[in-house]
Image 1 (tube, rainbow, N blue to C red):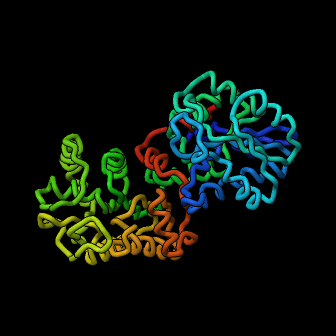
Image 2: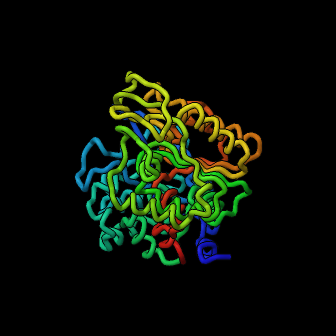
Length: 409
């Protein structure tokens, strides 16, 4: 058993407590995407937190929910208020959810003292307080007055050094634990951290930014059988190999280029693990209606940019995924929000879902990847949908996340 596993074993879960007549202060992640009418576009994070809430309610506990929403930068505003969640939560939980427009102070404590067993109080956006993002001891201490037991079920922000994530737990001593969602996230990600999954292990990485995934590549290359790289992430690889990438959008960063060269030099004996697209769908402008054609990824003409993987690349990636027993996916392989450049990403969603139905284990994280699964109506066919894109990526860098470390007894 490694150090990470030992630490996880020492962390208590909600199953280690009986919440009868106890007030649970639950840090959730209700930072969900909404449209201009404040209708929730993707409720995955909220639905995933319900088992923890229901467990505490069933034991006749009281619940105080704290979360952030958006980036209000310490300034209260209606745009970022959590009030829009009240009706949605009440319907989903089949319990009336109360709301209070503050997070700390005497009126909040009075409201909590008025709660009856089985009742829920949702507090206003934590990020209306600038102290939340500054690991502020005083703010964390005030929050600690709001409950008897601290529960962290906010995997989506467990990689952040924020007051409610890293400082607040220490004020609860041994009366702190992780929720059911957090427990699942840790368990499933653990399958990948040390190559514990059934082989062959395949990791598909997409998206536009390679800077956030270089450390992941360096970790994964040690145990993955196949590392499939698509989307904007693929073009820096092609560039350092001497290919012509036209006007394809890449992060212009000399450090990235140097690091990629180092990866190629250091892992030259494992470089066949990395599979890049062979062909791409190129466009003459960044819009759905642009003129498009298929091109070899190494010879994209000037004035054209790669916006999706091409048919040969789709077939190659599908072939590898079909024979894989453990699959992780983060990031689209094209500009999938443009229907004309979405085929590659949709194809990945379908082939991973099909492989899962045939017995493979699959874990998908990141808002865009999950959105593409939902577009193809195959999100329920995946073994596990991770609620934390950034936290998932940081885990894959072989890092012990600060919010998990803070839960150690």
